[in-house]
Image (cartoon, helix red, strand yellow):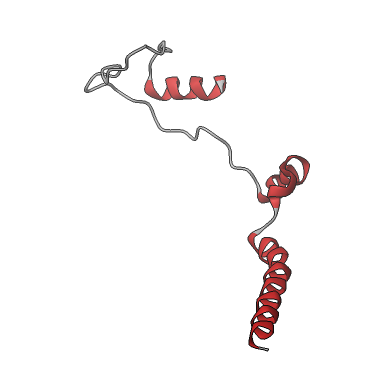
Length: 91
């Protein structure tokens, strides 16, 4: 995060400010000259994102399709149980 803060300060053409106990919207005065905008973060390639998901993601890395597929047998089983209970109550 220090590099991000440096980039923001560079774009704002300001020195680092301390975080006050009470914030007032007067840190940057009207007509302050702001530098050219730059990206704060680099783009993450999909391949790298997938690699990191596998390394650090754990179980929450399932895609929505995988989640639906995992839930489908549970839904079928509960539907069959409900149907069996319905037929038992009729007989």
